[in-house]
Amino acid sequence: MKAIADLAASGALRPRIEATFPLTKAAEAHALLENGRNAGKIVLVVEDGGTD
Image 1 (cartoon, rainbow, N blue to C red):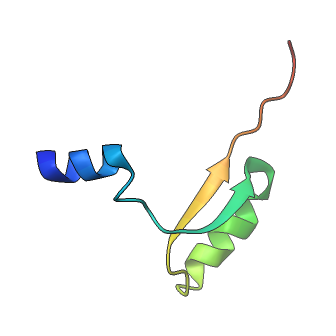
Image 2: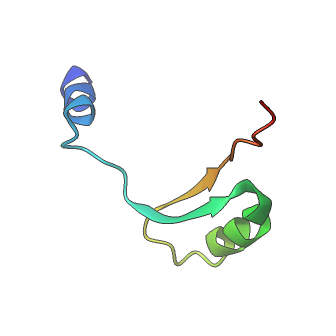
Image 3: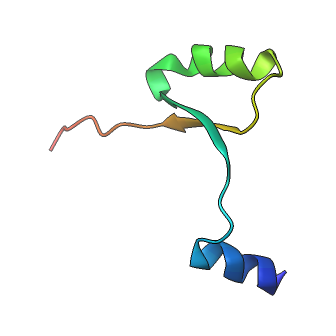
């Protein structure tokens, strides 16, 4: 387990990302998952609302 953690920490082990969607397009991301043809992970990005 430590060997895998070390690989991930070094950047040698990286997840394959199929697509990235903003949170507002979660339904589209879910549809992509449902078709079962994705070869990697689907990532939802929560964007900062800039309320500062």
